[in-house]
Image 1 (cartoon, rainbow, N blue to C red):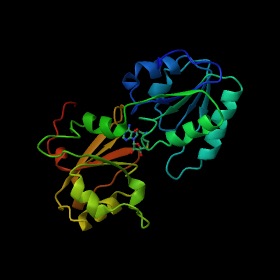
Image 2: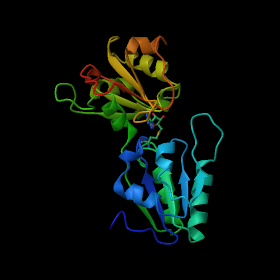
Image 3: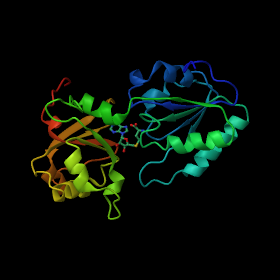
Image 4: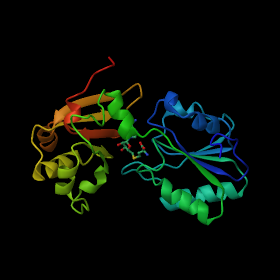
Length: 248
Ligand code: SAH
């Protein structure tokens, strides 16, 4: 299949918008965004990416962001199915990669069950792009042969994660949605045996004009002397020490 072929009437493309900068869109994403009837986009999709959108396309904000009232996942799936059934050519635009902590799976399941034609366009995920912008390689031969991507929402009391196993198996941990629970995440990792001096980086608004990087230690994150604001990627591990700043 040609990923960048023109959309057919009633077809949905689930498209990764990348971390923010429009220049990081894939060619297929740019083409489909620029030629469709409706774009159903998440709050995390940047204004920069939205400037690439077809001027005449209907723009529907579907996203939800930690704590804010917004459409439920069920409503979003219903909207996609309804638009497709009305014969529109639809782009479902999601930040980063649609299948990385993006509920893309639930949406394509709903489309498949309704018999709607769809395609999936991967995007650059923020968990890799954000460290790169900060000059941090997510793998480094001298540090890690494994790499974990995690959601920070799992740090609450009802955590299903085995923190000791994580700390043992993964020298590098990349947290999505980790800003609010950062102290909790850091405390759990300290309890699991990681050293107080373990370095971490918080990268906010990666690839955008207001990008910001903060480097600290696990104990500083645990005691609240450094904090994070959403949207941020938090990367923990010795790769942070190998950081090479390549921007001002
Ligand atoms: N599907 C997305 C992730 C969605 S979860 C992806 O692949 O990137 C939302 C989380 O993504 C945010 O809480 C934040 O942790 C991260 N994120 C998305 N864009 C970001 C950006 N430009 N800079 C830093 N973190 C970002």
